[in-house]
Image 1: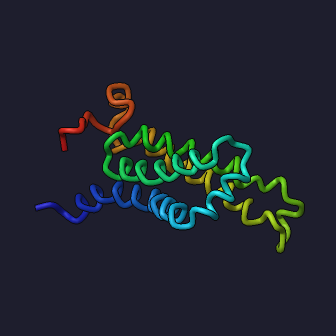
Image 2: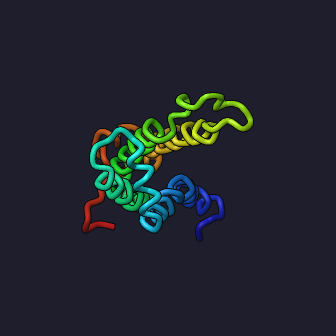
Length: 155
C-alpha cells in the first residue's frame, strides 16, 4: 500500500505543472473566441503576418501545456513556451513606452506587471526544462528533450 507521503511526492510534480500551465489553454481559447480583439493586439506589435502569428500562438498555448503535463517532450515544450512568454512580454507589454507607468493611475502599470509575470512564467518553465521529473542530472544528456525515454508508443 502506498503511503500518503509517497502519493503526495508523486502527485506534487503533476500538480505543480498543472498550476504552471493552466492559464495557457484558457488564453488560447480567449484568442480564438475573441479573434478580432486578439488580431488588434497582434497588429500592434512590429511583427509580420499577425494572423499567422496569432494562429501559431494559439497552437503553442494549446499543445505545449499538454506535452508539459503529460511528460512527453516536456522539456522541448517548456522551452518553446519559455520563448513564447519572453517574446510576448517584449512585444506586447512594453511598459517603458508609457509615461508614468509606475504611478497609481499610470496607463502602463498593467503592462509593467504583465511583463514581469511573463518572466516569472519563464522561470517556472525553466525549472521544467532543467529538472523535468526530478531525474538525476546525468539523464539530461541521455534524454535532452523529455524527462524520460518515452516514445509515442510507450506509456
